[in-house]
Every structure is written in structure tokens, then in C-alpha cells.
Image (cartoon, rainbow, N blue to C red; front, side, top):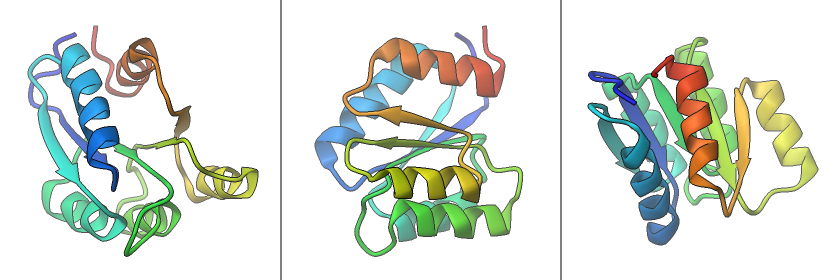
Length: 126
């Protein structure tokens, strides 16, 4: 789907998980600009400097966990569209992420069609 000019931030501390997610996002997102971060601190800094249209972020990360980063990003921009992508996480963490303003949750390992559905829903690409 063509979403030219849209910015997508992918943040995960695992190089492999980040690559898998980036590959899936790139495969279904023609024309988008891709930004990568490796921890919660980078997610916040990159969000503030790049102002992406969509964020895919892990919960369990060093320096700042996903929920702390989510909270800081939402404080900076209440309209931020953040999707949690995580394999590790208690119900409490996921519940907190939704309360903090996460728009959706994807369980790892994910299917490419889940990524495509999220992008279509959140960015309106066809």
C-alpha cells in the first residue's frame, strides 16, 4: 500500500526482532520513511525529533521500558499512534500500555497481515 511521506518508527532492543518488524513494515508500506530505535530513550528522542505518524514499540527494553517511553511520548504528543509489539509482558503491563494510550497490541511472533491491518487502519493506506 502506498503511504508516501508517512513516517514509521520501529523500536525494539532486539536486533533480530527489530529487523523482522522493519522487514514486515517495509514490505507492506510503499513510500514510507522508516526510523529505527533500540531502547525506550531513543524512542522518545526519535519521536520528538522526527514526529512519526506511527510507532511500533516493544514493552521490555533497557534504559526506558516501553510503557515509560509511551507515557513520555503521549505527554509530548497526545495524538501519537503507538502500537505495542511484545512477546514478553504481563497482563498488567499490557493493561497499563492501553491505559497510557497505546492504540493496539501485537503479540510476537506476529504475522505480516497483522502489520498490514494496523497500517491500513492507522494510516488509511490502501
